[in-house]
Length: 313
Image (cartoon, helix red, strand yellow):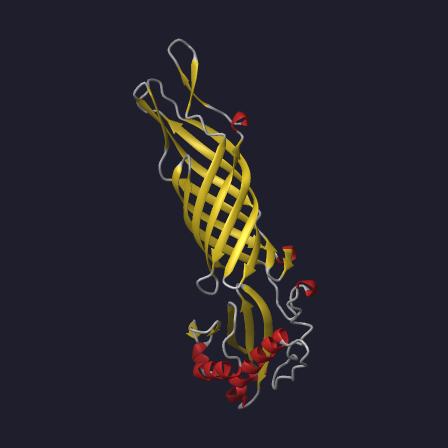
């Protein structure tokens, strides 16, 4: 993948750089000349598509953040490849003209199989909903990072999130579903009569975040449900047995994200809520007199901070 105009807010890439149709330098010059600098996190990608009987076309997709807002296919016939750079620049210019000046009726693009989007089709007002020219798809995002829990310490974190197009309220507001897996590095430990008892923890979590995007920044809120699976051992105890338990927790999350580049998102998340301790199994220590003593008793609440880096799949 080759990047052009890296200092501009509008990034241009191509997935077929060796095709030289059109040359990358020509696309860069044409886009800079016709479009100039653009406010926002826009990314345009074009690729050469070959069909039957020697048919060639350019597929152009424009993304706003991680969301596609424009898709066009520009036919190439004979020697018209030399004009493809201007055709790409003209499509992008007309798109931004229509967004910024809805009263202007754009001219058709030579060689395009579809007309350039009209002002009505690219209107970004909340009442109009997503642009009619956008090819909206379900989006998957994978992320990894670290979590710091107030009770259990540091954990390695992996997760995946899905944002179906049917759950999109506006072009910048979307609802998703996320699954997270965290393994805590340090075991939960308690010493009973100088003998240590330890429990390792694996956390599974499901959340439904509602995210608002604005340029490179995003924020999110949503409910959070977690299940902590713990395995306790007391190897130094007489007649020690391995024990297991499950702890349920319900709460919410708040998130702030920043996109350093197209398809990448750096997020800081805070999670908190209550643990259903009374509904969970317990770890108990059997004393010599037959009585039992609860050990490794969990807190009735949980609080956790997360730092993750995610990418669109």
